[in-house]
Length: 491
Ligand code: ADP
Image (tube, rainbow, N blue to C red; front, side, top):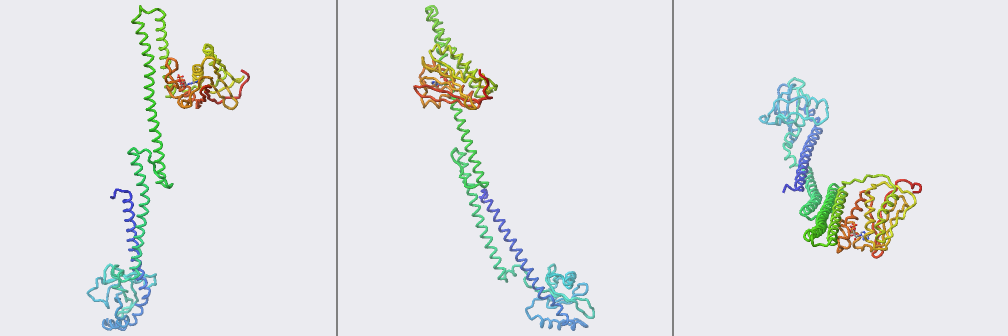
């Protein structure tokens, strides 16, 4: 039970509040008692002085106890609770009245308070009570002459038996009782309200604990309701943020794992088929070596060779992509003319375009446009795009490479009049091994890595590769690079 935070908090609070109540009650009663003593002493300040002229006649030759006690009766009435003592000059007790002699415990009184009293010091002043050794009481005192000896003291203890104990004092006082009841009630109400407030506060902690426990058990969608901006609210916000991050990371991990499986499956598939084909052709050649007509034999070897090249390309591309993705290749940024680069790459593809009957042309501004990028990587990306355009565009089609630097950026665009890419496939074409026409003979198309490589290269430059395509009309790939300096003179 005491394990819960609420129980600990409540127990601590109750101990504090009850302790505070007891302290207040003790101090209150003590103060009331002292106040009563103070009032008593102030009211009876001159009592001893007033008694002296009445006592002195009975102290001339001897102490006439009977006469003095009669005088006391006269003066104080029956119920007055006072003790009257005669003290020698050194404070020793000489006689006592209104007190049974047997109950006197202390036969000497400290005179320091008596002197202070007689000098008119601020009241209350407490002096020794001979009836109760070690306790101090309010008193009244005056000089008196005893049997010719001046400078002795008449020492009157006031309220001698009054309120001998706190309990009896409280028992007799309506006001003190009411005050103590009031205090008790205040303590009770404060404790009740405090416990309720603590319950409300800790309820939010309990709710949070439930959410965290659910989260731990696998309910990753659970979040804390944050209703305020205090420490508990902020803790909830922090937890929610942490849960979001965790969920995101888990999703990324799941996706990475899925991609890894797909990659392994794709790679093994793409490796297996050319290897099987090479093996098949070479086995045939080896078995039927003598029987095969030379043309047939040549055809088998050529096919095996083509598959070997394909394998080589695939392995190289995979290796390249993996290095790009794991950032093993860092772009070496240098300043160069993008116009020159485009011209060079287009020229390399001209023979292929011509062989396919495709009109491949570069449309560029007639001046240098300098950019800062990794020239080798950019050439690779551009080649992949032009290669694809030529690959997918039928004979008689057009492929254009446009450079446009109307703004602070230069826009590089590779467009073709090929078959276009269906809308559903567009979001996926940059994924590794993704091919629109999955049934297509893999001999003909690439491995599905060309666009993934181009996209990763541009991402390494902090850029994106965009695509627009209309089925039946053609496809445009586009990326932008920041222009380094104002355009130079004509190329
Ligand atoms: P691949 O090696 O198969 O060409 P890519 O990553 O270069 O792989 O391209 C992915 C897929 O996107 C291709 O299989 C093809 O279906 C489609 N594609 C790419 N470029 C074009 C284009 N210019 N016209 C039509 N389809 C294209």
